[in-house]
Every structure is written in structure tokens, then in C-alpha cells.
Length: 248
Image (cartoon, rainbow, N blue to C red; front, side, top):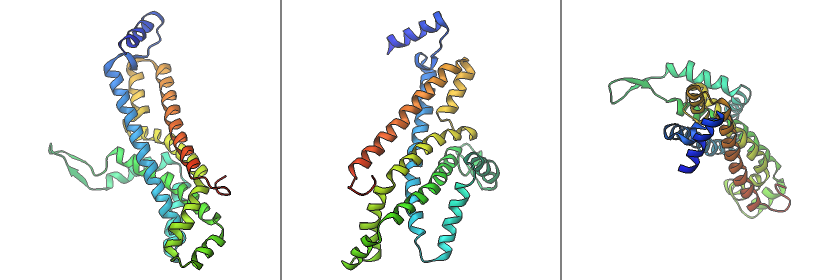
């Protein structure tokens, strides 16, 4: 690592190409912290949005019209408005209306931090699409499957848990992968409310060091690698669950 840092430092001295984020310990640590925040935001958003998708799809099958109406209203609101506008609305317009809490230093701070807001909004935005993705998978399961399970004595919840949902999951995995990839890329919008994720930190570094090209190249490589890992994991999951005739 020291040899690489020395070479990058000499590269800057001789050519002006400044990858300071790799040879300067302070800038390297700052960038790694921002990347870790992005990874945390992505993992939380992916997991919770999938939970919302499963729950919302199940609620859409409810016999209660009010429950279906609330679920549909949630979907239409978060799916049909831009995620950046949602972030600005909740953070700048709604957050000041919430109660403030005291810190250990005697000061007051918002009830929800900017990271918490960014996570919630990414979850709700992607979750709205996941609800429709899982709903389409449930509706694609042949009715003969549920009729056969019922004939075998399965109760409605058992039919959903052991027959409908496992088959629907196999069907929706390709669409779910696409939505998760979009979600990971959407986390960059957290920059707008000062969440110290990768893009926010990169902007700070290139503002201080005037190395926009080098920082943008670093960001491109980071996100290509991050999304590539997500796609690889999802494809492995899809392959492991594949059944002939489903999810092909």
C-alpha cells in the first residue's frame, strides 16, 4: 500500500493527476466512511423495502376495502412522485413540525436524523414498486395450485405461505433485481439532505483538492462494483430457487 501511495503521489507531482483519496490518509479515511454509509443505506433500504413489498402485496389481497384503499394510496403517492421531491418535502417541510429531543450537551436536535429520513424515504419509494412486483407474482401463480392445496386441507394462510408465496417469489426475482439496482443508485439522492454518503464526501474532497475527474472516476468504479455485487447475489439466489416453468 505504501508503494502504491508513493507512486500516486509522484504521479500527481509529475502529471497533475491527483488521486489524493488514495495516498492521503485523511482523505482516504473520509472517502471510506462515505462509502460505508452508502453501503449501510443500501442494505437497510433493500431489506426493509422487500419486507414492505411482501406485506403490501398481502394486504392487497385483503377482503377489507379500507385496507386495500390505504395500500393503494401509499403505492400511488410514492410511485408517482419524484424521490428527490419526496426527500425535500419530508426533510425540509415535515421534519421541522416534529418534536425535537435534547442531546447530552443540552442542545436540541431533530427527532429523526438526515440518515434516518434518507433510509425511510428510500425504503418507502422502493417498497411501493416492490408491492406491485410481488402482487404481479402472486397473481401469476396458477389458480390450480391454490385449489390443489386447499383440497389437501391447507388453511388459507398455509396456502399463501407454503404454495403461493414461494412460487410468486421465483417469478418476481428478475423484476425485483431491477428495482433493487435502481434503489442502490437512488441512495445518491441522500446527498441532497447532507447525508455523508459516498457522493457527498466525494464532493467535499474535490472541492478541497480540485480533482473532480479523479473523484468521479472513483465514484463510477465504486458504484459499478457495488451494483455488480448486488446483481451477482440476486442472480445466484434466482438460480438456486429456479424451478422449470417458473421464473424463466
